[in-house]
Image (cartoon, rainbow, N blue to C red; front, side, top):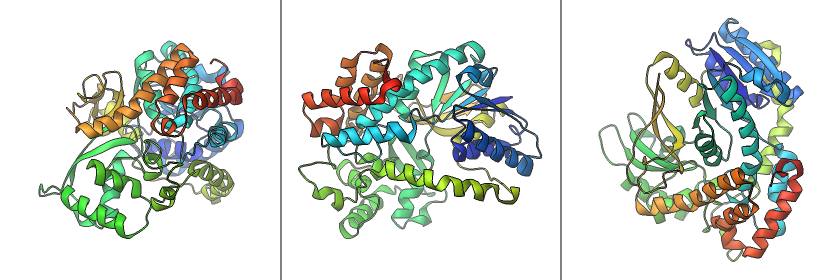
Length: 438
C-alpha cells in the first residue's frame, strides 16, 4: 500500500496524519511518499517521520521524499491514498495580501481562508494547482482516494468531485469535536458519554441538528437556556455561535471567529461596538501564522529532542478512513461530498458536509433530508459564493470572480459594486504569478 502526502512541509500535520497511520496495524507497513516544493520543510518532515517510524513502528514503513513538480508524478504513482495539505502562496505573500488589500477598502476579516474575499482568492490560486494534481493522478493513480484537508474546503472538494475523475472526500477537524466542545462550554460534561448526534450542512457551517443523551433525552432545550445565559453574563470566545443558537436555534461546527465573517451580521462598520461585544478577533489568522512561524524552530527542536519522537493516534479522520477501506470494517465520519440529493433543500452540485460510512467501497454518504429552512438559507448564502468561485476558476472568467465577491454576505454588506470589482482587480494583480491565469 502507498500513501502520498501532498504538502508534506506542513510538518506538524503530516506528523499527526502519518503518525496515526504508523499506529494502525493495517497501515503501518505502507510506503509513504512525502511531496513538497520546499526542500527544508520536506527534510524536516522526513527526519521527524523517520524518527516516529523507528520509535513507534519498528521501522515497518518505507518513507521516501519527492521535491518539486518534476518529481510529482513519481510521488503519486500507484498511490492508494493521497492526502492533500498544501497552502498555495503561503503566509507571505498571499495571506498577508488577502488581508491588507481588503483593509484599504474598509473590509475587515478574521480568518479569510474559507469564505469572504480571502477565501475566494485562496480558492482561485489553489484550484489551478489541484487541476495539475488531478491530471497527474488520472494518469498514474486513477483509482486513488483523495483526502482533502486544504481550505477553502467546499470550493476545493467541490471542484475535485465535479471537474476531475478523482474520488475525493473533504475532511475537517471540527465535526468530531463539535458537540463535545458545546457541552463542555456549557458545563454539561456529564452528558458526553453515550450521546447521540446528527450533524449536516456545509463545511464550517454544519449544523448540530440533534443531540440526545445516553437515555434519549433531547439536550437542546437546556443548551439553549444555558447558551443565552452565558452570552448575557460573560465575555467568552464562542459568542457568535451562541448567538446562532439564540436567533437560528442551532449550534454549528466551526468556531465563532470563523463564523463571524460568514454572514453580514457581526462585522459591520456601522456598528463597530459589536467587535468587542461579541469578542471577535479581527486579523486572527495572520497572528496565528506569525506565531506558528516563530514557534516552529523550537517545536522542531522539542520534537527531535534526544531522538525520542513518539506519537499516539489522534482524532484526525485520515487513518480511520484508510483503515476502513483496507479492512472493510465500517467507520462513520462527517465528510464533504457533492450533494446530489443528500440534503433536499440545498443545490445538487453544492459540496455538503454529511455523515458518511466508510468501508471497502470507499466513501458512502448518507441522506439527511431537509434542513430547517433558516439553516438551509444560511448555508445558501455561502454556497452561492462557493459555486461561483468554482465556475470562475474553471472558466477563467473574471466577471465570475466579481459576481462571487458581490454575493459574499460580508463583502456585499460593506462595499458597493464598483469597490468590490476594484478590490478584486487589485488582489489579482498583487497575487501575480499565482493568479496570472485570470
